[in-house]
Length: 454
Image 1: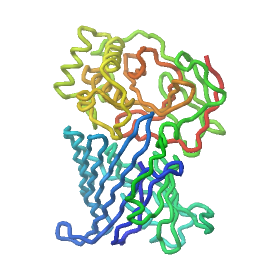
Image 2 (image 1 turned 90 degrees about the horizontal axis):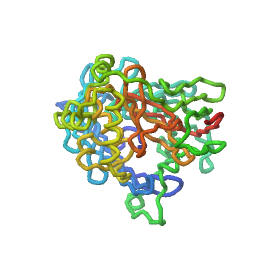
Image 3 (image 1 turned 180 degrees about the horizontal axis):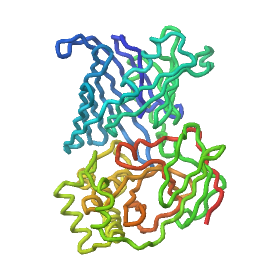
Image 4 (image 1 turned 90 degrees about the vertical axis):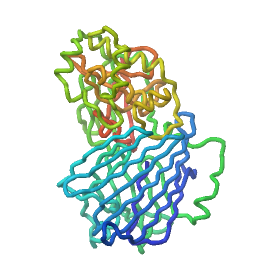
């Protein structure tokens, strides 16, 4: 998702075209106006974005409607409505003195989250204004946080002016916004108007008239596929990826600051990127579910989109696991169950609560992972979400799976393949709950050099 930052004080509606690989795939509307909130003068910022893209051969349409109320340049309320393929998520965040109280309605599943306000940076909905308010900022930077409604978490950003670039015959120093997920460049005219917004994955926004923005998007026969746009083709090519037992690669990217590690993945910083070694898990003795639960109780808790304390999930997990007390065998039963009941469907563009995934039994890898994690935790198996890259056909694509603590190690389980074997072509970038595992870095200028494969 592209975040658009605009200068404050603009009253009339502004429209922008959204482009991927040079093809228009949607539009964005932004408008702001003075309002009164709780008896105080405030400003209401409203944006509406429509995207129509391809994903793994399916067509995805997403709509994001957001509203932010600010008082004295501080946010007091944010509301986001995200919809795709008949599914919706509504997030309302209210800002207090020390925390953000967020209420979430994900397709009827209700939850609440309390997020402590950070002490090392303010929360902005408009970093451009903050930068413009400081003349001569070149060479300096601004650190701040953005509220992400998808993961219901704060994302720390860093904004600064970059070197001047030629854009349509004019030299402009873009404002570079580094987010943990992707990097955005904002190009402003001398008057402070937006000329272009570009991201590290090739999505761009450009100003359009209302008529141009709302005009029908021409059907060229195929929409740009985001999975293909972000795919990484290694060199040399990977042979027989699904049977790979050991893989050592050099992974480099413009925005890769760190690498996840674990019991089956080692990562070492190198001069030009990271040396990552992944070993296919082998059968190791597992301990009882009870001992595993006692050892890692924090990874049994319900969290955003993972309702592991739901009576329905607990009952289903008990039915799937049956009389099995061995943690590894129980985890495999759940992995196999999710694989059997689910049908791939890439046309749903939003994250969904596990209860809705179970009801519809369709989705993509992240839906499989969310349901797997929920049932595992409901069965008292400590479980993390994991996300990163995987190669099924020699090309690396973004993917999601889970890791289950089986007594001595965190063992990965992937519910997408029919077979239980977990290949060494899974390269983990992030892990945890939804707020960390699915807020991974979308790599910019990524290269993967295969150093060793067995």
